[in-house]
Length: 350
Image (cartoon, rainbow, N blue to C red; front, side, top):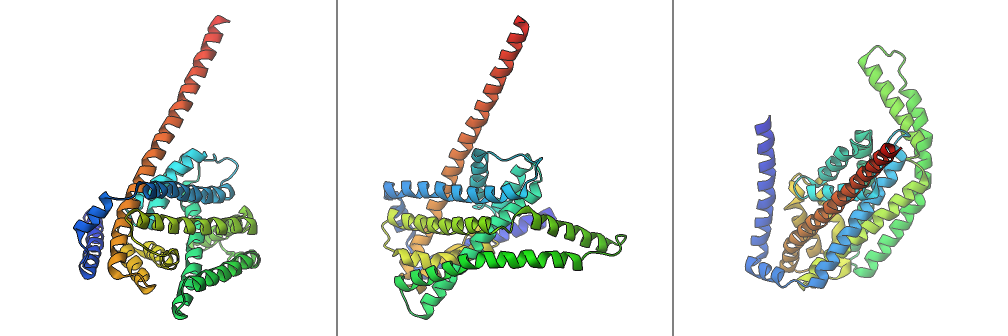
């Protein structure tokens, strides 16, 4: 079994690398010129990329904590924001080595083990908050498809995206009311009459979980609107990071082209089975950018450089977050030891 897993991991890595090689050969990209562009990268753009990566992790942290506040019970501990930020940054770093959809889930599930109900809060919370990201990506992908079908440009994309977003926001409350109305009836229909059979016990467990989810507040419109808007902000930051990586190596790309192409790159990341979506992400990004008017060679060079710069930014932020987390823990331990020593000294004096 271990050999099979190792073989699958190695196979996915080779497949991703092969896609990158094919893309380089097809677009006639010079690796020497790519390396030269990286060496002459603009420092201000790189700094902007790091800052935007921090903001991206902060937004993802806020989304997870918002869901976690609903999912945790009274006896569960609340993760400190420093810890949550550190865990999220580790999840993004893991996403460079594992399929993207697994990295964050594994990181949060393992860390939430120390705060109670790891599977529900770590895995479940991550799936819920990433579900809103998927919804926003689908909305923007629809705007991109409309722009392509109408042979439009920036104005068409932004107007289409605005209309679809407003429709999505307006549909949040009615959709959640419908879900809350349907769930009790579904629970009654699946309520087992005989609890002795395995299927009946599974159905009873399902009913209990549906009731818990309904009563948890997870389907409150206020929470959904917050998650919706945070996911929109996260998409904007992703576009800003792509723009910064292009500016760093002086590749000219219109902002609307990144907006139109980003949904397909994100969807490819979610569906990819290669580590970090390598190869699949580049292929989707280059194809989408080329469809929306960017030369194939420039799009390919940007995709390669963006992969390197984003990897560096994620690892840098994760390292800094780990350092801050360690210093914070050390400070708390030092304060606690000092307080205990002071109490012992006062007790001896008495």
